Image 1: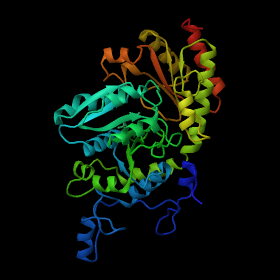
Image 2 (image 1 turned 135 degrees about the vertical axis):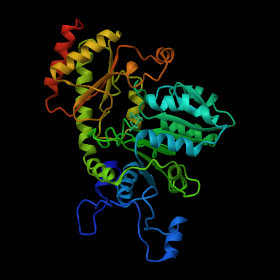
Image 3 (image 1 turned 90 degrees about the vertical axis):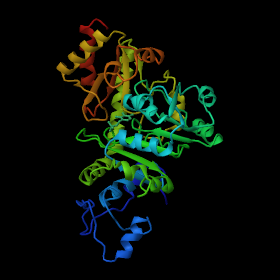
Image 4 (image 1 turned 180 degrees about the vertical axis):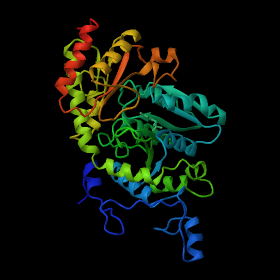
Length: 400
Ligand SMILES: *Cc1c(COP(=O)(O)O)cnc(C)c1O
């Protein structure tokens, strides 16, 4: 019987090494020998299943991690990359030719926004940025040369929820692809099952959860992945953004505890969000019933993992936000740092850090206030105590 939930699908995998090692062996090799010259030729043409040629193409350690990610995502295939940006840029460059057009959510990860806005014009690829909650605007933006709709399941940093089934309906109706970055909500949301064609990840965040490396993944159907690693014209094969197999091996081990970590991140974030709201602060957390995307997220999410570890509060003023973050760091709430999905709480002021690539007028347009602090709530065992520290800081600043 096939498991319905992403965590059980990973748990069900039988992956072990050649000596019965319970963790698959690390294949620390860039190249692979062949006993027959013919087999090498077949491998070059992608016609020798189970054979490995060269680690920029495939490496057994990368294959184990990719298989586990494909199981989690419910996609037939996956391929792992050296960073989340590598997964995103490889996917987009693979799908688009010069002269093509992309529709993207206006709120995305800052690096993605910068790539779409500043880098793609080099190839004469144009992008229309839309409010992804406005499905009419999405459909209206489609042109004859539109290749794909790009969004994040839960957008950064505004935590908007994308209506994946309806976006997929629009994409299919017009014969274009839906590409979804699911970095904020692995396991919680399964974009492929909801109609996305390609799901991309920064594994740097929740999936690895240790902040000891950057890594990414592309999850899709077999044809798409095979086309990306084609030796003659595959974007992944030719640009070479492959993940190191030593890292694949360590990320695979961390992936096996992702579901437990997510539950703790989610319940801690929910506690923080509710308590901060009780203090009268402006809190943005999709788990709160008044959040614009709350109902939609409930419809789309897999049960049992919660609403994720990301939340934001708006102090309106950048100065106040900076002071609060410094005080919280002093009190031991967590670290003033970019990134997310770490075991300690991380906080940063989005408008002046991870979204600083987004021009100020766009920040205003999307409601990204200079006082917006994004929290990636950690795995704190005593979240009541952590909240109390935040409350004391807010009190000293005169907010409560
Ligand atoms: C961090 C992040 C990325 C980029 O990933 P890297 O691993 O830093 O290259 C892309 N999308 C989202 C939503 C992210 O949070």
